[in-house]
Image (cartoon, rainbow, N blue to C red; front, side):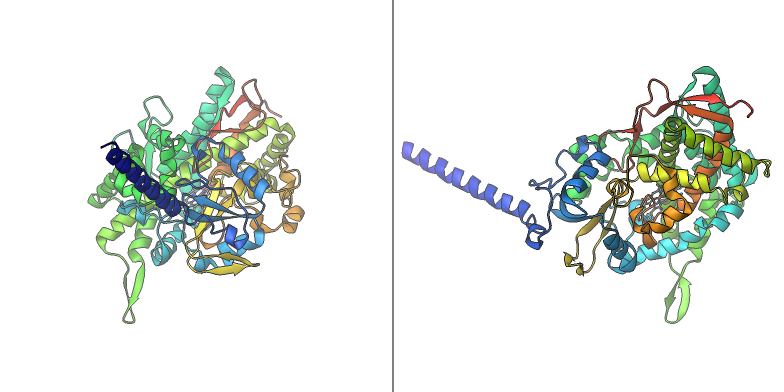
Length: 530
Ligand code: HEM
C-alpha cells in the first residue's frame, strides 16, 4: 500500500517536474535570440523578460542606466518578445527614415476595439498610410494659421450646447486660452505666490484641444467639479501603471481580450469615446457649419480615395468614416493634452531654476512685442532663443520616454541582424543624455541649439517628437501652442524656486507612456514694468 502511495507520489512529482521543465523551456525559448548574435543585454526572467519590476521604477533613470551599462545597441525582452534597443544615430536613421518600409508599424497591441485599431497611432501597414495621409493636411502650419473654429459653449455633460457660438482663428483661440491661463496665474501670484504648474497647464492644454479640435468651450475646466480633466488624468496617471498589469499588453498582447479590454481601456477612455460619439452625432443632425479639426479631418477622410479598375472611388464607407473620425478625435485629445502640459510644466520648472535663461527669453519676447500689439502666429516665426529653450527642455525631459518600430523584414546593419518581428526601441532619455551627442548632458543649456551648434549635431540624436514619416503628426500644433503660452505668460510673470522646488525634476514611478513630473512647484510673481 505504502509502496503504491510512494509510487504515485513519485510519478506525480516526475510529471509535474517535466511539465514545469517544458513550460520553462517554452517561456525562455527566445532568450538566446541576442546572445546567439553576440548582442549584449540584461538577463531576462521567465514570463516578464526584462520587464520584471518596471512598474516600480523611475523609467527615465532606468532606461539611462541600461544604456550606460550595455551600450548603444543591446537586446531586451518584453516578456519573451525580442526588442533591440538602439541609441546609435546611424541605425536610428536607417530604421526610422531610410528603411521605413520595413519598419512602418509600432507593436501590435491586438485591441479588439475598432476605435483603438483605427487610431493612426495603432493602425498598421496600408491602413496607417491611408489614415495618416488623409489627416496630415489638417496639421500643416497653413491650416493651423488659417482654420477658424466655431466655438460652442459646453458644460460637463455628454451633449454640446449650441446656444453660444463664436468664430475664431486657431492661433487666436490658443491665445484666448493662454489669456485665461494668465488670469489664473495672476490670482495665484497674488494669493499663494507659488504654482503647481502641471495642474494649471493641464487645464490649459485641455482647453486648447477642446476648443481647436472639437469647437467646444468647457466652462469649469480645472475646477473642483471638473470631470473632464479628472477622466483625462485617470488615463495618464492610471493606478494600473504601477502594477504588473501595466506590462501585459507588452508581454502577452493576446491576453488583452481574454482579461477584458476594459481593464486597459479604462473608464476615462470610455468617457472620451462616448463624448466624441455624441458630439459627432450632434453634428451630423445639426445643419451648422463647423471648421475645426474634427471637421477638417472628417472632410479629408471622406474625400480620401482609392483606385478601383482605373477609377478613383471613396476609400471608406459611411460607417468606417465615422469610426475613423471618432478614433482620430479621441487620439488628438489623448496624444495632445498631457504631452503638451508636461512640456510646459518642465519649461517653467527649468526657467525657475535658471534665471539667466528666463531673462534672455523675456528680453527676446519683450523686443518682439514692440512690433506686435499682442501675441499672434506671425510673431512666433522669428524667436530663435524661445526655440532654443524649448528644444533644450524637450532634450532634458522628453515627455514620451520610448519610441519604437516593429521590423517586418530581416535586415542587417553594420553586422547587426534585425529579424522580422523584432521591436526596435529608442529610449529618448538615454539618447538625449548621451555625452557623445550632448556634452555635460545634465546641464540646461539652450545655447546647444544655436544655429552653429545645431548644424554640427547629427539630427538623429534628438527624438522628442519621434522621427521619420511616422513622427508626431501634432508637432507643429504643439509648438504653436507652447510658444503662444510661453510668450503670453513670460511677459507677465516671473518664476523662481521656492522651498518645495526640487533641485532636478522628479518623475512619477511606474510604467508611464508620458513621463509625469511630480512636485513641479515653483514661485510665481507678476513682473513689474521694466
Ligand atoms: C509636446 C507635445 C508632444 C510631444 C512631445 C509628442 C510626442 C510624440 C511622439 C514621441 C510620438 C511618436 C512618434 C514616433 O513614433 O516616431 C507621437 C506620435 C503622435 N502624436 Fe504627438 N506629441 C506631442 C503633441 C501632440 C499633439 C498636440 C497631437 C495632436 C493634436 C499629437 C498627436 C500625435 C499622433 C496622432 C501621433 C501618432 C502618429 C502616427 O502614428 O502616425 N501629438 N507624439
